[in-house]
Length: 269
Image 1: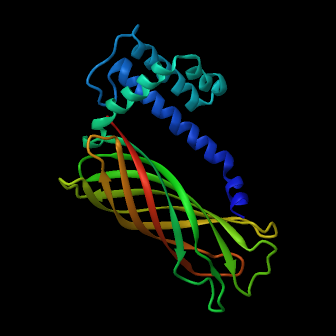
Image 2: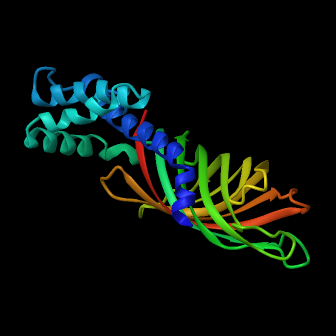
Image 3: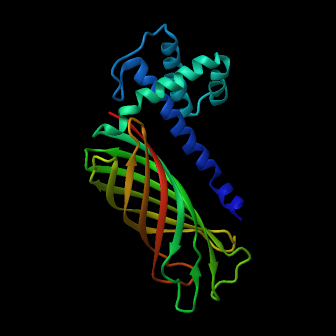
């Protein structure tokens, strides 16, 4: 069941991963070659770090665009292991101060559980709790405010008398644009709240039913923990999702609770 759900989003997940990984290499190359993204300076072009920067910058851009991805991905195997290790070490150090910046691009991934808090009908038709995962891109505008785009994918089984299905389950996708406000503390913890809106898409596994989309509102709160002298942040958040489930003979709004644990990577600008 889970394998079928993952296969449905396989191409999208591969595309998202390609863009994220390519962007990370691109930014590290930009730090080395041009001093972008909060780097203190540049490296010598003909040094080992300079060569690594060229490979990261050009290779990352090509990976993001989907050009020659197989040969580009093979390039690191042509170089000495010490060069690769040095490149990774420099990338980690260069990105270290990222989360201490008030302005940054933030890439994040998250996973957890989605719990329906309302029934589809008074006869007991309901969606079951299920896993959810996803991620997105944020734009830190200052110490207290950020914008973020979020995409979450999940699966829920259906139970009830109204629908007779060979495969009683729904693949669910939620995409939203959200505003986040937070309160950083000196101890590394940063509680925050968020709210936004977007689209919810229901994709039934039973082919006799058609997919549908509806407007969605999402809101909640959480907390970040910024690792000292690191480019990584762990976060835990809980949010509510409200959307119209007006299909298959049902009418009314569905309310779900999402509990998510995530990891974020920040790049200052």
